[in-house]
Length: 288
Length: 244
Ligand SMILES: Nc1ncnc2c1ncn2[C@@H]1O[C@H](COP(=O)(O)OP(=O)(O)OP(=O)(O)O)[C@@H](O)[C@H]1O
Ligand SMILES: [Mg+2]
Image 1 (cartoon, each protein chain N blue to C red):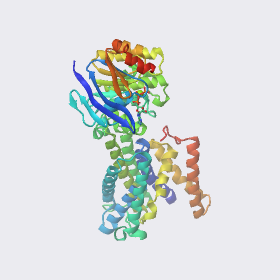
Image 2: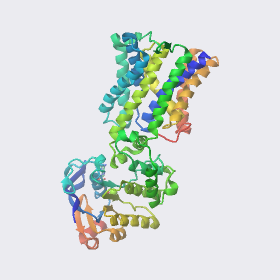
Image 3: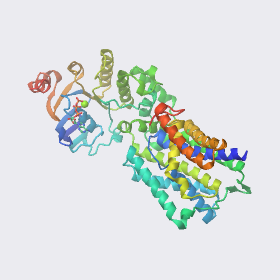
């Protein structure tokens, strides 16, 4: 049972990340690979505030999105000139800078030792230290994020994002300042991603820079592409499948290292097959 | 009659090509102004400059007598201007209905976040789709439409924008007579409403039928202008079309 809770917590965390990735990349068509950076910014904000300054994790659930949002605002403004693959490269650069800073700024991030002893959230006399209680918390955050994503995708704002993905130049002609929309969705996506980071830090109680590499961002890409671009349900399905499939492999008795390698191969193969036979993903209606 | 839109010595070059070359033209309010010229004479480039799709290199553009130094497309609504595209540019993976809704809903991103399309928006969009015979197709993606239907949806977006000035870049190109008739009627109705229209078109029958005034461009320059019947008999114009 504990194991199922564990898997479900992971699915919730990745569900949040995939929804955020989908909002930015699926709905608005902004090719970003910085997902892992904002996930990491959330995790480190929570870890540093909780271990060095004694903050409650609940408080960091509020502060981390603000920190991630402000950083995304700065990044978004400086990358505003870039489009498509240039934007992609710029976000990759940002992720690499984030990783280098985290690895080397030992006083603050613990460098390659990471940060250990991150507490569980507590409120009054209640501590979310059992797998079940943490699962409840993770699900609550997930449902808030789902709510936000549906709120956006069903608003006029969401329709504008889709039109930006389809033809930004044409949309501008009809009186839209598309740069503001893109900046806003980038910031919102970063804020949502950071929530996943806070949950992760508090759940596994130890974080280091290896958790937030480009592989992690690629996994998020795989999730939304597999589930179906621009569909909130697709992002959730993608997270569910790409967390459970590798776990199932381990369950069938493959040793850990081999399961890990197979996992990489399966992601790769899945992406290739999807692009060949179902480029819109399982639930999707859209291509990038 | 007022000069609602005017260019003075307008210039746009691409490398060595002078696509629009010291062009000075007046567009009169409430009229249909035809814009003709051989392929590559700079008609689309002019439309692009007037709509902020690309920026001019020199000269000036006046809206209602006031110069617009830098034409930024997101201000087109304020300046009451819209256009169609010769190379169709629809939002392909969105429904036909959404292609119209996005034109009539909130522009401010903060307000747009809290706006859901209302019955009012839907019925307004459906009315427009009925005018361009696309009501039945409203739940199809724009990308699935036939060429003629795509051209009609481009017109639908212009109707949805409801601006005073409308620039049509070859709205009739490649269409069957039936649809041509349909679009001619729409353009006539727009004129009745008092809109100012610029119409790029190669078919001289359509030009004669619709236009009050004709501007002929060649190699980015103004070749001739005036009443269509008169201009179309001028020797320079015939030569430009028929070659030396
Ligand atoms: N983006 C661009 N880059 C380079 N050259 C361009 C560009 N746009 C237009 N041109 C050139 O500018 C000139 C004018 O082109 P434009 O499209 O305005 O002509 P047009 O009158 O609309 O022709 P058509 O009747 O074929 O539509 C052409 O020589 C064209 O090759
Ligand atoms: Mg043209």
